[in-house]
Amino acid sequence: MHFDKLSATQGCHAELDSASHLKTLNQVQGDVHRIFPKFDKNRIMEILVYGIGGVGGYFGGKLANAGFNVSMIARGEHLKQIQKNGLEVESIKGNFKVKPKVATSDISEIPKPDLIMLGIKSWQIPSVAAELKPIIGEDTMVLPLQNGADNVEKLQEILPKKNVLAGLCFVVSYIEKPGKIKHAAFDPKITFGEIDNSKSDRILKLKNVFEEAGIANSIPENIQLEVWKKFLFISTVSGIGGLTRVSIDKIRESDYLHDMMQNTAKEIIEVANAKGIPLSEKHLEKVFETISAQPEGTTSSTQRDIMNGKPSELENFNGFIVKEGEKLGVKTPVNRYIYECLKPMEAVARKSKE
Image 1 (spheres, helix red, strand yellow):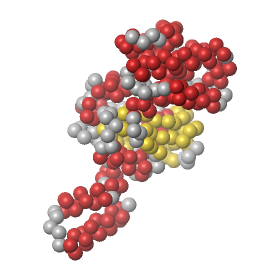
Image 2 (image 1 turned 120 degrees about the horizontal axis):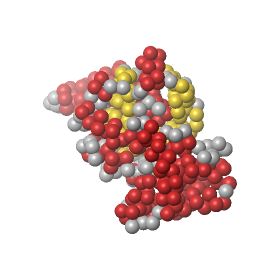
Image 3 (image 1 turned 90 degrees about the vertical axis):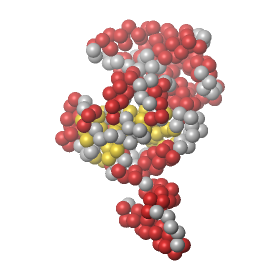
Image 4 (image 1 turned 120 degrees about the vertical axis):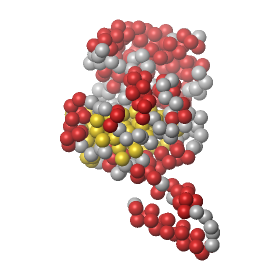
């Protein structure tokens, strides 16, 4: 990699001499960076992955395995094992083990990051954003990867708007034991972009970073639509899964519950449309194709959190739709029913964590 960069630079200098140009060294280096963007300063980019669960552990591990400077924020025994033995990733795409540049629970020990990837739950965003604020630099990019339709807005309430990107990911992975991530299914992918959907220099540079790390990625024409497409699926199955406490295949076998999921999704689409998000009937059909394709025993992480008495993303899923519906004058009776039935349980789970 470094030799390739050297010969590319030398080639530009040779052309400079033969053409008798009088560019400065900095101008030539700028040309190299434009012509060979992959050889820009990606290798010394400081990356912080906050939250080393299934999402942060897998994608952060891939970046570290590709040689990038990756720091990791983790907690408890998981952190101790990473500090002692590194992070192990067992993946259907190939196993690997990495030693992050820094593994800590203390944000003050982290080098000022160029990129922050958030592998946390959506309900944790406000507190984590406040914690991150002191280390946000002028050009720091903050990329949320969690489920939820308003993650960007919540980040921008605390952090400078210019630092925040929009994103989502697709991966089935989890902490198998402290220090080890298990990637069990699905080809992992990150979808991301600027809030205004422009193809900025930093977005293109970030694409190069992901590609060099072997992470499938895409920059869509409308990142907000992509966020809501995933939100439509996950919010349709998560709350009702927590309520029924059975897997998706059991829910879809019931005509009553299948209709309930349909009505949940239709309310989400109505709220999205009222917010200017162009979800449509074809997206509804796609969601139910996905639901029909889920293997037996499939549950969502939010459902599992609810069933295990842990704080969940209920407020950010069905609760969010209920509250946005109230603001926009959109009736959401099915989402409200699910939300109100689960809210007391959620309150107990949150209180237990105080």
